[in-house]
Image 1 (cartoon, rainbow, N blue to C red):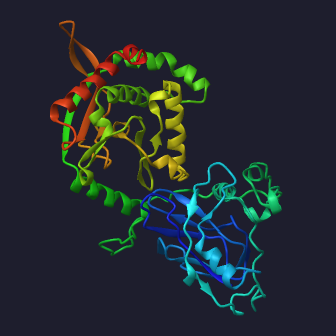
Image 2: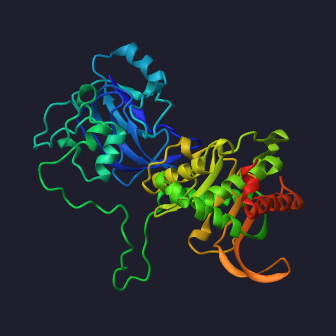
Image 3: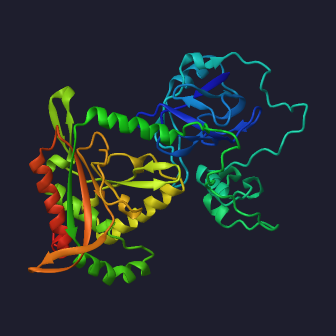
Length: 429
């Protein structure tokens, strides 16, 4: 019997995805868990695995096309399954196992219902096509396939040591081609000069850009934005960072100011629960979060992504720094998972790393606030009744005024300033 596999919702509120690469073709045999297609969603780039064993009859959509959740992806001929047994299979949600850490698709995927079954025919059978067909693609885990693509390795040439000869992460790491390797492909193209005589250039919106646009409008329409600006002198913090920078480097971790700001923010959130909350108007209630998941806005060539440091209150400065480094690397390689992008309770955005000083950050709705971090500058300050050169960090706090009053926003920001100006106090809490 025939089975139509629809594009599943692999994340919270996912509506659509863009096809980046097909791994299967008409007539190809597939096994449950084998990657079918690489999709770009509004949160991640991920491989979609097959829910069934069988033969590909049809693939729906070409590379670059947008597929909506619930729309067909592939039609599979399920071998040895007929009648009522096939109908029963189509009604049961399938949990797709992921074999290696780093793969993004996890959990239960809802499949199509009864109408996904079609009567069998000769169309799409595995008999050879008239023209010569390429060698069948190797079985591989999604992580191994992504690594091979990043390293410009033809995965069909790699010998798999996993179950049924499946290529794994270790196989890619241990692969040494006999021939001279080709030059690696650049991950991101530079902007090209527009064609001569063209006054405008049209490019389709990426999934991530569409999501950014939707989320920004959603935030502005649903939250009452209010911003507060402050400065803090951080010479003591700079001295501490300089003192421990070498020891962090020995642990393969770069020590920036951001881990200290995360720590200061968490300490302040514990004293100002309104900033770690959201409003639920439908049920006439406030939702106060008793956990502290700090989202970090990261600039990538494809657009802004906001992964989350989970339970930041339980982490040391070193552990926070390691988390930031790992999430930043995965964001730029487009390897973040759905779990790494959700459940944030408060957001930090560090535009100062590029050069800005002040901003009015847009709240990561439905959170209550977002802290913008500006560029550190040297400027004259008054210290002990003397004018001296200070190292000043500008901060911009935006809050949802429905949740946080102006006085509470200022008190919260003042606590952050206290921790950053006296970092030893921050470590004692």
